[in-house]
Length: 149
Image (cartoon, rainbow, N blue to C red; front, side):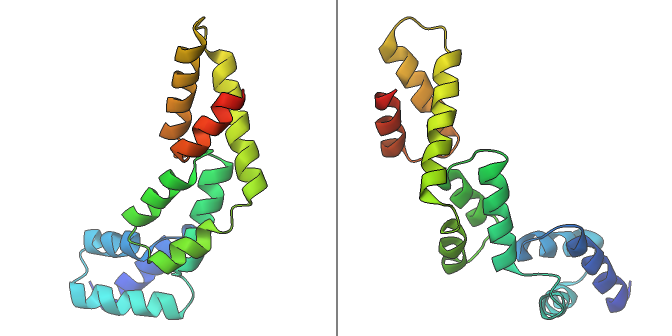
């Protein structure tokens, strides 16, 4: 394939939704692009606005928090998996409103606690905390909220 064909495939891949640089590089490799072509294509896609890790990180944070109800820890792991730079991660995570974050955690914990049929309060709180921590919320914050329930 020619460079222009790989570039067009990259444009279409990135136009569908926001993508990370790592995700796009992997896809270009799957298409069969050489490392030299991939590097050049990534630079072109960035300059044309198709590829932007800052925009990708903010979109991922918003989506995973609002739709999947993930906490900061899990979102951080996902962004690290995409090899997003730490300063971009910090900036993207700061988009989460603290009051909205706490209310989401309270709602998640409340729903989980209400759904547990366990009679023992200690075990019910443990299961609730485990669920919230598994969703990526910070353990100390989770226990504070669970103990308030």
